[in-house]
Length: 621
Image (spheres, rainbow, N blue to C red):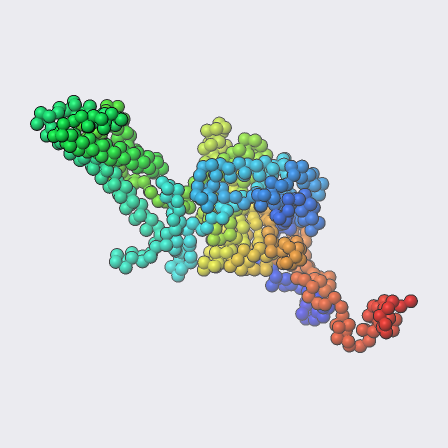
């Protein structure tokens, strides 16, 4: 039914002049609200290294913005260096804008084998290479280069929606001492009545772990000291019996650490030999424990030092400084060959335990994995941005950090916001220190060169944790001030399907409203439609659904934003192939079902084409 009650009878066509046409297939925009078609782009096929040909193919759709794909690191490494410059020439010739998607790599350097600085530095070099290649695509401007905030890591804090709000049900924690990660799945403690809360459990584990470490350290120091004292009591008995003096025993103790020891023992008188061996064993046993305690003290002291610096606690820092000076004096005067000195040193170690036990900011032996990954990833992103700025100055590419599909690490808005803030802070500090920039200029460049690529399809997948449109809009509001780029894809919140906009339940209108609310000029932000499920003949015939994207977004046919709009005018020609595919058959119904004379061959006045005899099947002369 069209305007004025007219019935549309032409098969396969929608009535394009109906102002409500296409609403069931669009993102729900009112006329004039849809984004400018010139700012909606499409990516190239990430499966090919021939990105030059891929660009040419996408240009035939009429898109004004193309995202060159380097998603797969191996494919990017196979792209000839000449192709990037040729793509730039093609860009100028056709008059399109380019963005670039860098390889999906884990910026923190974490692998299945754990974390090493070597892995992190290697990832940083890989990203630097991608930035340099992206710069060749747009050497005269600040091309947006997207990197994922994480790659392959699971969600580090599992959050679900409850009737009382939001709850963290699981958490991955990191042990910096061993470099290992553990997933906390707390249970209710029915004895204490404590509810299952990963954050509370982590706090208790850290508190108990620190006390356990100090107790073990104290035990080693006391055990060593007591063993040495026991040996000295043996020495007093020997001196009392006038069988040996202290100087001789100390000499024996020194020689017990050499190859001469056994020969010396064999020359001792029987009444002295047993007591001397006991004395030396006690000394050795005690010294081992004291040295172990000292090594453990160093480890715990270093943890406390780092924790105190991070917390900025001046009182605790002064305590550690004072003990550090005390220990240095003790070490300078300690001759470990003298048992009495070992006792004094054991007391000094025990004094260190007491100092560590009185700190207000006890170090955390375990901490949320999200903090560790944020720290290492921000280091990589900050260094990459600084390297780009050093090489290209005002023409440096913009590093835009994308949220991966929900369920992956650093995929929520709060995670992305924290990562960008930390990255900008580190960039500014490094730029001031290494490049001599003023504080104001360093912050300005950090805000310009480091931002967010917000993928509305990826965040939509929090629906499987119980969230809805209201929470999705809040996610965008959190990250809106940092957004420099948008990725468009639709889904139903359960799987990463990447449909064109309007074919799933991504609340795109709410997302754009949130961006506009925070002062973002949405009409200037490039929005790339990632429709991965349309690649390949197994899906939708290897098509590029740019038309469907424009229809779903309700974009104007004209760059000025005036009517008609794609969701109104799409398919108005009324062909069988309009809409979402070959809906009606290639032939008329009559030719299939035999009604009338239309199935007769043309030579008999019908419509059925035939070049063969109806009798024998041989060609007619």
